[in-house]
Length: 331
Ligand code: ACO
Image (cartoon, rainbow, N blue to C red; front, side, top):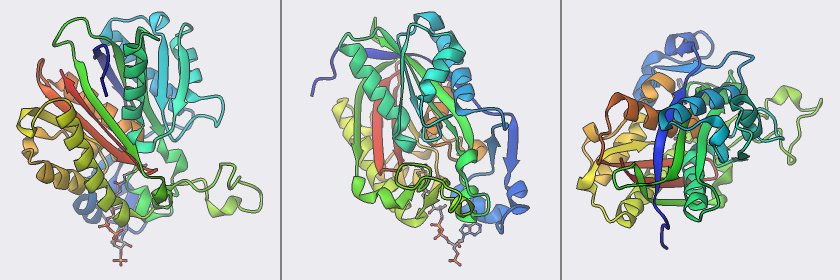
């Protein structure tokens, strides 16, 4: 299918809360160890949002930085999409609060829910809406306050996740080398919903006085099964997008994958035949921030100079649903 009028990434931004929670801090809460967490996941610390700091606050801060880098005023942004599984409220959408925080009154704003794949789902939607001429620009944001949806007594999940937000501004590409999004691809397998979910708090299982003590509004995961699907789907998705962009693995200067687990990232790099020094990681500092993770990583890669103008970058993600997605960009 044609990818339409060229659309580019004009700016990126990210925000991480101040509070750092180390593996040593977690050793005091659950029966775990620095050694287990580092060898199984690579994570050394994560950030935790303040009690009065919501997903929308982090999203707006990341969004403001992306707008600043793109040289676009909040008042001129036409579309805001927030990808999150930890919204401020079930309704209205977190994107509506973000619109208000930013003063972006001219924007249409809505959320999407695709877990860790959400930022690239948002990228594909925004790209299409811009290339179709419906909007001139868009602010896409991945933002999560996962700490509010973690069972802090479950060692199999609480060591993995963190809070944060990442953002990008998309607009029509004016000239080659503008940061053009060359190709995107995404997929879903709804047969696997049981592998990773937040079972309570929705219409299937409202939280009531009778179940409030069961912590059903927290993340539940069958980690080992998720791991296998993650490796297979991310490899396939990255390969598809590389082919769709007319590229080969050796053309890729940097792969920016979902930041869940260093062992998953190692396995994908090996299967894609991309040397490890061409794979960006920051999960050591932030853990898995779901929809925010790839967006934060992209911003850090951009601002640190890990991606240079004209180079090809592949983003690839995987999450609950199960969902997966990839994007190829000529930076
Ligand atoms: N500290 C110490 N021991 C632990 C901990 C912990 N924090 N957690 C589990 N263990 C124990 C288990 O009880 C088990 O003990 P047993 O052998 O005595 O039964 C042992 O460690 C091994 O447990 P596994 O779950 O098999 O460990 P595994 O090597 O699979 O690693 C992990 C677990 C890190 C969760 C891994 O499976 C993983 O990363 N899975 C993928 C997660 C992911 O990518 N999610 C992405 C999407 S997230 C989203 O969409 C929101």
